[in-house]
Length: 113
Image (cartoon, rainbow, N blue to C red):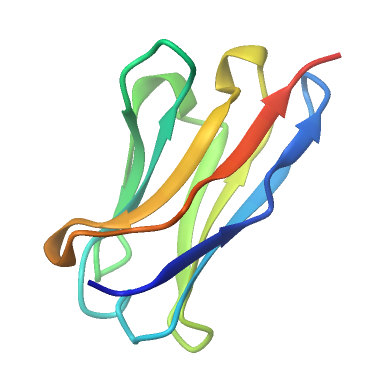
């Protein structure tokens, strides 16, 4: 496992934006596919986005056109840029690298007026 640390969550009004960051100690994002999950109270964990080592992204339908996943290998960091946020985006967001079974501790995103 590799240590992953998320940051950037918070409270934002509907229509607002946030950028989540996932920092790694190791050079993991250049070696493995990585992604973001989210989990809201009473709901199953949901895969939000993934990015391959070639930089190819995938997104769940509900965030397409609003969220952008990216990595900066020099900074050993993965990002999730979130725009046009909706109340249903509220959840704890986790970054993960499935090949190494590595997860971050999660960062809370709350979208509310």
